[in-house]
Amino acid sequence: MTRTLRSAEPRAPRSGGTTRDLRLALRRDLYAAGAAVLLVTAAALIGHHIQHTHHSLRVDWPPLLGSWGPHLGPGTPAAVALAAATVGYGPALAARLPWRALLVAAWGTATAWILSLALIDDWRRGVAGRLTTRHEYLQVVDRFHDVPATLRDFTRHILLESPDNWPAHVAGHPPAATLTFVLLDRIGLRGGGWAGMWCIAVGATACAAVLVAVRALAGEGLARRAAPFLVLAPAAVWMGTSADAYFAAVAAWSVALLALAVTGRRVRSGALGSGLLFGLTCYLSYGLTLFALIGAAVLLLGRGRVRTRPDLLVLLLAGAAVVPTVFTLAGFDWWEGYRLLVTRYHQGAGGVRPYGYWVWADLACTVLITGLATAAGLRRTGATLLRLRHRHRLRLRLRLRHRGQRLATRPDGPHRSGADARLALLVAAALLALLVADLSGMSKAETERIWLPFAMWLLPACAFLTRPRVWLAAQAALALLLNHLLLTGW
Image (cartoon, rainbow, N blue to C red; front, side):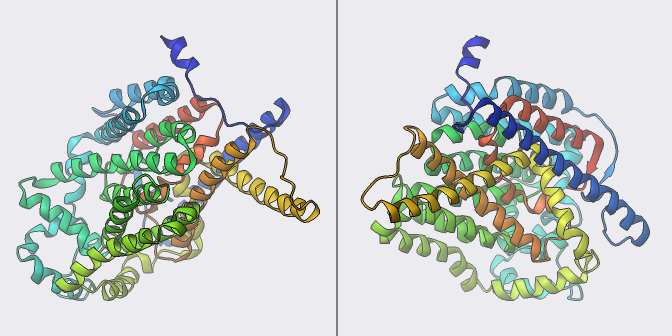
């Protein structure tokens, strides 16, 4: 049985090179991973120095919000067993399962991975108590007894000096985030346990959404290679501890539905559904408006379908207008809320934390939530884009020299290189969105939680890697070490 599974394991992406070239590529992957380790090390050492001398970082274990506290918990055996099983059999199963079964298996395994990591801190601290602290959404559920009146009055409680000001996370997000937990409470799913399980179960679907998008845009082969890395992501350490996992899923499905629309699988329903979810995304988190950059990349990759189906854009924009229209008519002004949030952000820790440190230390946080495999995958993503640029220039030169003649390529070259290029462009768009968020100065610290939605779209870069089991083992080891050595703040 083991031999059969291994024989079904997806092959490494073809590079058309010699064994020497493959070894060189692997060596460069290790250099990229090493550079990521150095970045995290520098962020930790410099961060500890700044915090101990100036106390301006407002985190106890920079660059993460957490504290040193080695521990075991009830989730430890399950997390270790699940990691070992996924490393050992994940790539082979991802290659041979029927597609729909793979999506269900990916969601189920991701849910189990997130939950087992959360339970390392036990049920109360790891799941049930996360969304009930003084900064969180469940603190204000009782204040939404009259939802329309609360929405009309929402912006008046954002600033710290305002009467009955909102807790930090309520003030820092549009009201759709808090309303989600209000609605859970209204239907009888009250308390931190239900809220935590909602974030875990819904957040885990982000894995399936990314797979759907990658398959539609870059082919099933690359999606299957990416699947184990999406399941076993170190981001799971924080996916089970914050509402940002839920936000990540909504944003991911908005992109997935758009990918289905532009590839002709679900043109009308996909475009309309994508617009609806993107509108909801913008009312869950102000910063996730940057997902428009990822959406733009999807439209670029599907520009042929967009040209032939102008109704696609009409339905997309119509869907995107629904949620903003509902909230605006209910009395909430998104732009006013964001303007006041910027002021509130600088009234709190955001006004103290030094931009000069966090603008690069936040990238170290990204390494910790996406893992060393993603650092190597991003290196290969960059190499793919550089090859694409070189081939484009070469093609233009040959067209000028030999008009009417076709460019000669390897039999497997155009299809394979085209799929790689499409995936590389999608990942690059996610990286660009993350960098814009970084440079904005509105994401100083806590990005291990805030950037979860963007991190999910960097993980598919791991599909470019050879030796997937080794890299998966590195991903799992990082997640287990983080969760067992640190008491994370989220």
